[in-house]
Length: 195
Length: 195
DNA sequence: AAACTTGTGTAGCGGACGCTAAAGATAAGG
DNA sequence: CCTTATCTTTAGCGTCCGCTACACAAGTTT
Image 1 (cartoon, rainbow over the protein chains, first blue to last red):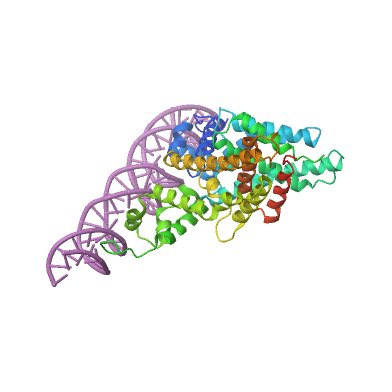
Image 2 (image 1 turned 120 degrees about the vertical axis):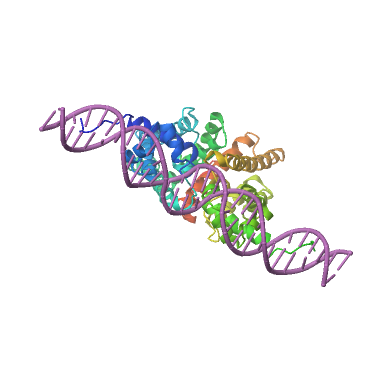
């Protein structure tokens, strides 16, 4: 046990509350006042525990990737590239449609455009999207090496196409698309899969 | 000539300047101070000419659809559905990569998530995205009626898939994708085209 | 020219923003 | 018990936000 007075709130629960707000309203659209209210934490405690708004967002982003967005690394563990992509789309739709949190993907909704003050957040989200695409690409490279995916396919191109559809699904979800509609989008996308 | 003192700035030029800012920084990320500076218009003149920030955004949005985003209705005039989609993708990539304005599509970057104050803007953008998709769907319905597109294809589903890719391209552009990369994404998407 | 109408410039409104200093509260270690 | 370390509370910092009141400038109409 640390020396002084123990904190009266749970870090992870507060982080979850912050994540929901950032997810729904974006980085710039989320105010400290709304954060402290939803997290049940006073402003100085928030700063002591998380640093500042930007650091809080990054920690919420980490939590996002470890929990709701964990479907992506999980999907890539499927035995074949095709199965991995099917799982990936399935997971993306499930997350994007989950009523327990806002529609869409935080990596897309957090901030595509922003004022100068939030430029570093915008870039951080861009990096995370690239990292997701790179993980898919590496999985495809492995699949080609294993002979599971046609060697005529370009792993990088295919990964970029797949992720373009995933980001597009997130935009569609923000527009109120239904699960069935997103599923038909995925069906169409899978028709492009290399024979 | 109207009665009083004539205004000293051009409405359309000022609107273009506002459009660029909203495009780059989103609705919430664009301040009135930056708008007045870029537009070369004082605050009271701006309010007299455009109403308020929200009305100004809507007018800039109209201008966006009539100028940079006019590639969509233009593409739909192609003689066949397949050619229309090729033109649509080509136009989307050209616009999204045009160095004269920010990367990506205003309908996506303007605001996917926002604070409560900008909720109506978010909904407006969502409506415009739906309208774009509906225009594509109607073009496909016509193509099916004309026998130009296989009647086994569902016009609504296909339109939603195509537009999902377009929105995804916009997200990719925000991440610094190159034109060649977007073109390969489109190639992959077109492999799903019904025979 | 006088009267009128409208745009422009200055200055500032009330409020929300992100953030922090200072003091009181509550636990541990000694 | 007393000290120490940490968290919580209250209050408010300076700044920027979107927006507007008001006086002045610059045109047209009569």
